[in-house]
Length: 177
Image (cartoon, rainbow, N blue to C red; front, side):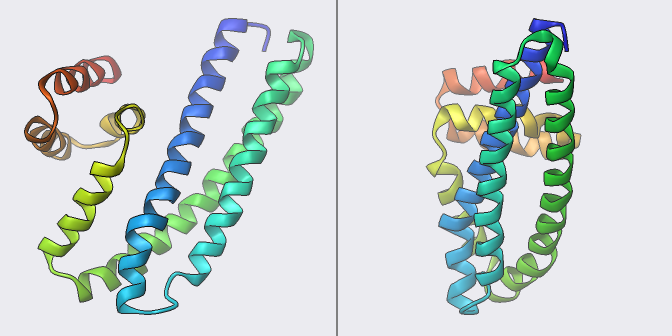
């Protein structure tokens, strides 16, 4: 808690994670939920409410990070512990939320849409992400992917990105791996 640089780096990572979570919910709301609603009206009602709760939680986590920013070094330990515990509980709830989406919603999508239709939704979603947010997402995704998944991402990116952006993505991969 007394190391200003370590605290700043940790808070930057936490804020990046919160921004990525927000991007994830926004993208689901804009692209995935409409696809689900077309085949089963009302399917997303509960999840939409959970997303609203998640947005509130993200704001609360950002507020806890701001408390750390505003705290003198001697008081940071308590504030960091509060943020850590709140972030852990948020992550636990989000993993449960994503488990439902990954099992129930994916099954519904696979039952009602062809692979080509799902790829089109995916591609529209990816195309909507501004470059700076895409790099934020890649920073977290690249290390989490296994080698074949990583290769597929970069093969797709190579054909869908401008050369300079692709080089930047490779440099990012080199940095985070």
